[in-house]
Length: 328
Image 1 (cartoon, rainbow, N blue to C red):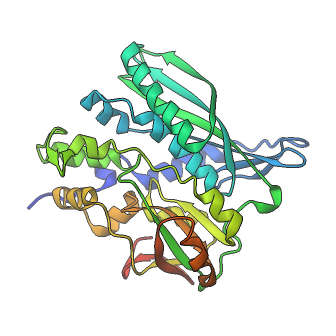
Image 2 (cartoon, helix red, strand yellow; image 1 turned 90 degrees about the vertical axis):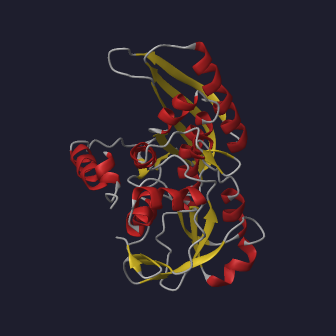
Protein backbone atom coordinates (compact mmCIF):
# COMPACT_ATOMS: atom_id res chain seq x y z
CA UNK A 1 0.00 0.00 0.00
CA UNK A 2 1.27 3.46 -0.90
CA UNK A 3 2.48 5.45 2.09
CA UNK A 4 0.16 8.30 2.99
CA UNK A 5 1.71 11.66 2.09
CA UNK A 6 1.13 14.94 3.87
CA UNK A 7 2.65 18.41 3.96
CA UNK A 8 4.72 17.73 7.09
CA UNK A 9 6.28 14.58 5.62
CA UNK A 10 7.08 16.56 2.48
CA UNK A 11 9.06 18.99 4.63
CA UNK A 12 6.58 21.75 5.49
CA UNK A 13 5.12 21.44 8.99
CA UNK A 14 2.49 24.18 9.24
CA UNK A 15 2.10 23.84 13.01
CA UNK A 16 5.86 24.11 13.54
CA UNK A 17 5.92 27.10 11.20
CA UNK A 18 3.13 28.79 13.17
CA UNK A 19 5.03 28.27 16.42
CA UNK A 20 8.22 29.70 14.92
CA UNK A 21 6.34 32.74 13.59
CA UNK A 22 4.84 33.34 17.04
CA UNK A 23 8.33 33.22 18.53
CA UNK A 24 9.43 35.81 15.97
CA UNK A 25 6.44 38.07 16.61
CA UNK A 26 6.88 37.86 20.38
CA UNK A 27 10.24 39.64 20.05
CA UNK A 28 8.98 42.42 17.78
CA UNK A 29 6.93 44.85 19.83
CA UNK A 30 7.98 48.34 18.76
CA UNK A 31 5.21 50.41 17.18
CA UNK A 32 5.60 53.80 15.57
CA UNK A 33 3.39 56.69 16.71
CA UNK A 34 2.08 59.58 14.65
CA UNK A 35 1.94 59.41 10.85
CA UNK A 36 2.49 55.80 9.79
CA UNK A 37 1.28 54.22 13.02
CA UNK A 38 -0.22 50.74 12.54
CA UNK A 39 -3.97 50.37 12.16
CA UNK A 40 -4.07 46.65 11.34
CA UNK A 41 -1.53 43.87 11.89
CA UNK A 42 -1.63 40.10 11.78
CA UNK A 43 -4.13 39.97 8.92
CA UNK A 44 -3.74 39.37 5.19
CA UNK A 45 -2.08 42.78 4.98
CA UNK A 46 -0.68 45.28 7.44
CA UNK A 47 -2.18 48.77 7.38
CA UNK A 48 -0.63 52.06 8.50
CA UNK A 49 -2.28 55.43 9.10
CA UNK A 50 -1.39 58.16 6.61
CA UNK A 51 -3.80 60.78 7.88
CA UNK A 52 -6.64 61.10 5.40
CA UNK A 53 -6.11 57.55 4.09
CA UNK A 54 -4.22 54.37 4.90
CA UNK A 55 -1.49 52.35 3.21
CA UNK A 56 -1.68 48.57 3.13
CA UNK A 57 1.44 46.44 2.71
CA UNK A 58 2.03 42.78 1.90
CA UNK A 59 5.08 40.65 1.18
CA UNK A 60 5.23 37.14 -0.21
CA UNK A 61 7.15 34.90 -2.57
CA UNK A 62 6.61 32.18 -5.12
CA UNK A 63 8.02 29.39 -2.97
CA UNK A 64 9.17 26.06 -4.36
CA UNK A 65 7.18 26.61 -7.54
CA UNK A 66 10.44 28.12 -8.83
CA UNK A 67 11.92 24.59 -8.75
CA UNK A 68 9.23 23.39 -11.16
CA UNK A 69 9.95 26.41 -13.38
CA UNK A 70 13.66 25.56 -13.41
CA UNK A 71 12.99 21.89 -14.14
CA UNK A 72 10.79 22.95 -17.07
CA UNK A 73 13.22 25.73 -18.06
CA UNK A 74 10.21 28.04 -18.25
CA UNK A 75 10.43 31.06 -15.96
CA UNK A 76 7.88 33.24 -17.82
CA UNK A 77 4.98 32.75 -15.41
CA UNK A 78 6.48 32.83 -11.91
CA UNK A 79 6.52 36.64 -11.99
CA UNK A 80 2.73 36.58 -12.31
CA UNK A 81 2.59 34.35 -9.24
CA UNK A 82 4.80 36.75 -7.31
CA UNK A 83 2.56 39.73 -8.04
CA UNK A 84 -0.62 37.70 -7.50
CA UNK A 85 0.33 36.36 -4.08
CA UNK A 86 0.83 39.91 -2.86
CA UNK A 87 -2.01 41.83 -4.48
CA UNK A 88 -4.57 39.14 -3.63
CA UNK A 89 -3.72 39.67 0.04
CA UNK A 90 -4.37 43.40 -0.44
CA UNK A 91 -7.75 42.65 -2.00
CA UNK A 92 -8.52 40.50 1.06
CA UNK A 93 -8.76 43.61 3.27
CA UNK A 94 -10.41 45.81 0.62
CA UNK A 95 -7.24 47.67 -0.45
CA UNK A 96 -6.42 48.70 -4.02
CA UNK A 97 -2.85 47.80 -5.09
CA UNK A 98 -0.85 50.69 -6.56
CA UNK A 99 2.84 49.70 -6.53
CA UNK A 100 5.09 46.66 -6.39
CA UNK A 101 8.77 45.87 -5.79
CA UNK A 102 10.50 42.54 -6.37
CA UNK A 103 13.46 40.75 -4.80
CA UNK A 104 15.44 38.07 -6.63
CA UNK A 105 18.12 36.13 -4.78
CA UNK A 106 20.06 34.06 -7.29
CA UNK A 107 23.03 31.72 -7.32
CA UNK A 108 24.24 32.87 -10.74
CA UNK A 109 22.74 35.94 -12.48
CA UNK A 110 21.73 34.21 -15.70
CA UNK A 111 20.35 36.81 -18.10
CA UNK A 112 17.93 34.38 -19.74
CA UNK A 113 16.35 33.45 -16.40
CA UNK A 114 16.03 37.10 -15.35
CA UNK A 115 14.60 38.12 -18.71
CA UNK A 116 11.93 35.42 -18.47
CA UNK A 117 11.09 36.35 -14.87
CA UNK A 118 10.63 39.92 -16.08
CA UNK A 119 8.04 38.76 -18.62
CA UNK A 120 5.87 37.41 -15.81
CA UNK A 121 6.40 40.40 -13.54
CA UNK A 122 5.30 42.72 -16.34
CA UNK A 123 2.20 40.65 -17.07
CA UNK A 124 1.33 40.33 -13.40
CA UNK A 125 1.57 44.08 -12.90
CA UNK A 126 -0.59 44.66 -15.97
CA UNK A 127 -3.26 42.24 -14.73
CA UNK A 128 -3.23 43.82 -11.25
CA UNK A 129 -2.97 47.40 -12.54
CA UNK A 130 0.12 48.18 -10.46
CA UNK A 131 3.47 49.75 -11.30
CA UNK A 132 6.71 47.93 -10.59
CA UNK A 133 8.63 50.86 -9.11
CA UNK A 134 11.85 49.08 -8.18
CA UNK A 135 13.45 45.99 -6.77
CA UNK A 136 16.66 44.23 -5.85
CA UNK A 137 18.68 41.39 -7.34
CA UNK A 138 21.22 39.74 -5.05
CA UNK A 139 23.85 37.28 -6.26
CA UNK A 140 24.34 34.87 -3.34
CA UNK A 141 26.21 31.74 -4.49
CA UNK A 142 27.10 30.72 -0.93
CA UNK A 143 23.46 30.84 0.22
CA UNK A 144 21.16 30.24 -2.75
CA UNK A 145 20.89 27.21 -5.03
CA UNK A 146 19.01 28.31 -8.13
CA UNK A 147 16.96 31.38 -7.25
CA UNK A 148 14.22 32.69 -5.02
CA UNK A 149 11.62 35.27 -6.06
CA UNK A 150 9.63 37.45 -3.68
CA UNK A 151 7.98 40.85 -3.66
CA UNK A 152 6.16 43.51 -1.73
CA UNK A 153 2.99 45.33 -2.74
CA UNK A 154 1.56 48.61 -1.49
CA UNK A 155 -2.11 49.49 -1.67
CA UNK A 156 -4.41 52.28 -0.59
CA UNK A 157 -7.57 51.93 1.44
CA UNK A 158 -10.13 54.18 3.11
CA UNK A 159 -9.62 53.76 6.85
CA UNK A 160 -13.37 53.44 7.36
CA UNK A 161 -13.68 50.71 4.74
CA UNK A 162 -11.01 48.20 5.77
CA UNK A 163 -12.54 44.71 5.65
CA UNK A 164 -11.35 42.54 8.51
CA UNK A 165 -14.22 40.07 8.95
CA UNK A 166 -15.57 41.70 12.10
CA UNK A 167 -18.96 42.21 10.40
CA UNK A 168 -19.39 38.48 9.71
CA UNK A 169 -22.56 37.04 11.25
CA UNK A 170 -23.86 33.52 11.82
CA UNK A 171 -26.00 32.68 8.80
CA UNK A 172 -23.93 34.66 6.28
CA UNK A 173 -23.16 32.79 3.09
CA UNK A 174 -19.73 31.89 1.74
CA UNK A 175 -19.35 32.72 -1.94
CA UNK A 176 -16.53 30.72 -3.52
CA UNK A 177 -14.54 32.12 -6.42
CA UNK A 178 -12.63 29.58 -8.56
CA UNK A 179 -8.86 29.32 -8.64
CA UNK A 180 -6.88 28.89 -11.85
CA UNK A 181 -5.22 25.74 -10.52
CA UNK A 182 -2.72 24.93 -7.81
CA UNK A 183 -1.60 28.60 -7.56
CA UNK A 184 1.63 29.00 -5.52
CA UNK A 185 1.02 26.86 -2.45
CA UNK A 186 1.59 23.24 -1.57
CA UNK A 187 4.18 22.80 -4.31
CA UNK A 188 6.59 21.11 -1.89
CA UNK A 189 4.03 18.36 -1.30
CA UNK A 190 3.07 18.24 -4.99
CA UNK A 191 6.70 17.88 -6.08
CA UNK A 192 7.37 15.13 -3.54
CA UNK A 193 4.30 13.23 -4.74
CA UNK A 194 5.45 13.47 -8.36
CA UNK A 195 8.97 12.36 -7.38
CA UNK A 196 7.79 9.43 -5.23
CA UNK A 197 5.49 8.23 -7.99
CA UNK A 198 8.49 8.09 -10.33
CA UNK A 199 6.87 10.59 -12.69
CA UNK A 200 8.36 13.41 -14.71
CA UNK A 201 7.10 16.94 -15.34
CA UNK A 202 7.04 16.09 -19.06
CA UNK A 203 4.33 13.50 -18.31
CA UNK A 204 1.17 14.16 -20.38
CA UNK A 205 -1.59 15.81 -18.36
CA UNK A 206 -4.73 16.70 -20.29
CA UNK A 207 -3.71 18.62 -23.41
CA UNK A 208 -0.35 19.69 -21.96
CA UNK A 209 2.23 18.34 -19.50
CA UNK A 210 2.19 17.85 -15.75
CA UNK A 211 4.82 20.58 -15.44
CA UNK A 212 2.69 23.00 -17.44
CA UNK A 213 -0.25 22.28 -15.15
CA UNK A 214 1.79 22.98 -12.02
CA UNK A 215 3.10 26.21 -13.58
CA UNK A 216 -0.33 27.67 -14.29
CA UNK A 217 -0.07 31.16 -12.76
CA UNK A 218 -2.03 32.25 -9.72
CA UNK A 219 -5.25 34.05 -10.55
CA UNK A 220 -5.29 37.78 -9.79
CA UNK A 221 -8.69 38.66 -8.30
CA UNK A 222 -8.94 42.26 -9.51
CA UNK A 223 -12.75 41.96 -9.64
CA UNK A 224 -12.82 42.10 -5.85
CA UNK A 225 -12.39 45.88 -6.07
CA UNK A 226 -15.63 46.14 -8.04
CA UNK A 227 -17.37 43.74 -5.65
CA UNK A 228 -16.64 45.85 -2.57
CA UNK A 229 -17.90 48.97 -4.35
CA UNK A 230 -21.28 47.49 -5.19
CA UNK A 231 -21.92 44.81 -2.57
CA UNK A 232 -21.82 44.88 1.22
CA UNK A 233 -19.05 42.42 1.97
CA UNK A 234 -18.53 41.12 5.51
CA UNK A 235 -15.29 39.19 4.98
CA UNK A 236 -12.72 38.22 2.36
CA UNK A 237 -10.29 35.30 2.36
CA UNK A 238 -7.43 34.58 -0.05
CA UNK A 239 -7.08 30.79 0.08
CA UNK A 240 -3.35 30.04 -0.05
CA UNK A 241 -0.97 28.00 2.12
CA UNK A 242 -2.84 26.02 4.80
CA UNK A 243 -5.91 25.97 2.55
CA UNK A 244 -9.26 26.65 4.20
CA UNK A 245 -7.53 27.21 7.54
CA UNK A 246 -6.93 30.70 6.14
CA UNK A 247 -10.53 31.45 7.16
CA UNK A 248 -9.23 31.61 10.73
CA UNK A 249 -7.78 35.04 9.91
CA UNK A 250 -11.33 36.35 9.86
CA UNK A 251 -13.85 36.36 12.69
CA UNK A 252 -13.66 33.56 15.27
CA UNK A 253 -16.78 31.74 14.12
CA UNK A 254 -17.34 28.57 12.08
CA UNK A 255 -17.29 28.02 8.33
CA UNK A 256 -19.23 25.13 6.83
CA UNK A 257 -18.40 24.45 3.17
CA UNK A 258 -21.34 22.16 2.41
CA UNK A 259 -21.16 22.42 -1.41
CA UNK A 260 -17.51 23.03 -2.40
CA UNK A 261 -16.41 24.04 -5.86
CA UNK A 262 -15.25 21.12 -7.97
CA UNK A 263 -11.48 20.67 -7.50
CA UNK A 264 -9.29 20.84 -10.59
CA UNK A 265 -8.06 17.50 -11.89
CA UNK A 266 -4.55 18.25 -10.56
CA UNK A 267 -5.87 17.97 -7.01
CA UNK A 268 -7.51 14.60 -7.68
CA UNK A 269 -4.26 13.46 -9.28
CA UNK A 270 -2.15 14.51 -6.28
CA UNK A 271 -4.60 13.01 -3.80
CA UNK A 272 -4.59 9.65 -5.60
CA UNK A 273 -0.87 9.45 -6.39
CA UNK A 274 0.17 10.58 -2.93
CA UNK A 275 -2.54 8.75 -1.00
CA UNK A 276 -3.36 12.05 0.70
CA UNK A 277 -6.33 12.33 3.07
CA UNK A 278 -9.10 14.70 1.96
CA UNK A 279 -8.66 16.60 5.24
CA UNK A 280 -4.97 17.17 4.44
CA UNK A 281 -5.85 18.29 0.90
CA UNK A 282 -8.13 21.04 2.21
CA UNK A 283 -5.51 22.04 4.81
CA UNK A 284 -2.80 22.39 2.14
CA UNK A 285 -4.28 23.38 -1.24
CA UNK A 286 -6.99 25.77 -2.46
CA UNK A 287 -8.86 22.76 -3.93
CA UNK A 288 -10.44 24.86 -6.66
CA UNK A 289 -11.49 27.87 -4.56
CA UNK A 290 -8.88 30.62 -4.58
CA UNK A 291 -10.96 33.29 -2.89
CA UNK A 292 -13.92 33.28 -0.50
CA UNK A 293 -16.31 36.19 -0.07
CA UNK A 294 -18.58 36.28 2.96
CA UNK A 295 -21.79 38.30 2.77
CA UNK A 296 -25.47 38.15 3.59
CA UNK A 297 -27.66 35.95 1.41
CA UNK A 298 -29.58 38.89 -0.04
CA UNK A 299 -26.38 40.17 -1.70
CA UNK A 300 -25.77 37.01 -3.73
CA UNK A 301 -27.80 38.07 -6.77
CA UNK A 302 -25.73 41.24 -7.13
CA UNK A 303 -22.33 39.63 -6.64
CA UNK A 304 -23.03 37.08 -9.38
CA UNK A 305 -23.13 39.97 -11.86
CA UNK A 306 -19.60 41.02 -10.96
CA UNK A 307 -17.48 37.93 -10.33
CA UNK A 308 -17.70 34.25 -11.24
CA UNK A 309 -18.46 31.75 -8.51
CA UNK A 310 -21.35 30.53 -6.38
CA UNK A 311 -22.47 29.96 -2.81
CA UNK A 312 -20.46 27.09 -1.33
CA UNK A 313 -21.34 27.28 2.34
CA UNK A 314 -22.42 29.27 5.35
CA UNK A 315 -21.11 30.80 8.55
CA UNK A 316 -21.88 28.69 11.60
CA UNK A 317 -20.98 28.88 15.27
CA UNK A 318 -17.69 26.99 15.23
CA UNK A 319 -15.28 24.82 13.28
CA UNK A 320 -14.15 24.66 9.66
CA UNK A 321 -15.66 21.77 7.73
CA UNK A 322 -16.05 20.56 4.18
CA UNK A 323 -18.95 18.22 3.47
CA UNK A 324 -19.03 17.05 7.11
CA UNK A 325 -15.24 16.60 7.28
CA UNK A 326 -13.83 18.76 10.07
CA UNK A 327 -10.48 20.17 8.95
CA UNK A 328 -9.48 22.54 11.76
